[in-house]
Image (tube, rainbow, N blue to C red):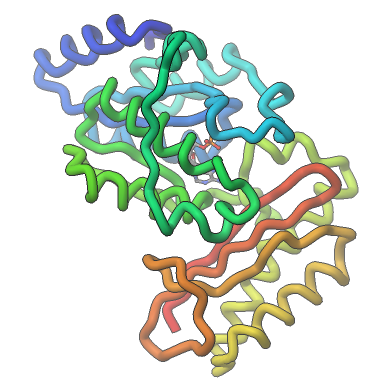
Length: 283
Ligand code: AMP
């Protein structure tokens, strides 16, 4: 495995792999790898001869009040985990490599970027789509892998790829969870021991929603209220949102219709740590 910081070096190493007849799989991340990231790498390795991982804590997707400066970083540990998961090349650009002085181009997916996470983080998806577009243009993979954990992000990136005719496939990989159900996230290290023991209630609330729909509940407000009260009973939290939306249009549903696939995303704060999770349910 090789680690490179410059775009030109990455392009030529990938061109060499292609000339050896290898196809390219790509996993963009912000690093501090956990088994969720590694599941994307392992899938990429199953499907492609050469696997590229990017690690870049992208400043344009953080608001000034957010955790850019304290976002966890550990390149040595990431390198070991990435190699064990089948990675061939880690791209670790500097901010100046990605956004040189005078940088002025941005990609925006309208509509989908302004709901849910977009209501609480208004500039966030513009930063995400811009950096993902840049990274996908640099790597030019056959398949780029994203996680269902960030459901809205995955939907937005698929829309961007379709709208802008990006070549290559986009693959969304299931959420990897801790044994107690908490979705793996680099931000879980921010949780105090007490918050960490309370946090699995998020997954339990999503499972509760699934049980309610299975037993015939068709009113989204009833389901959301049940989730809300379960979370509030078990943990002192601030719930940013719990919604029931169409799985591809992200529009809120006022009634659940048999056969429809809905996404239930939530964002909840444990102290200063904001966690997101979701479930997809076909009614
Ligand atoms: P991040 O480093 O948080 O930007 O995540 C990089 C990629 O890994 C994104 O496509 C995420 O959706 C994905 N990812 C993060 N956490 C998980 C998880 N628990 N399971 C599966 N994929 C994940």
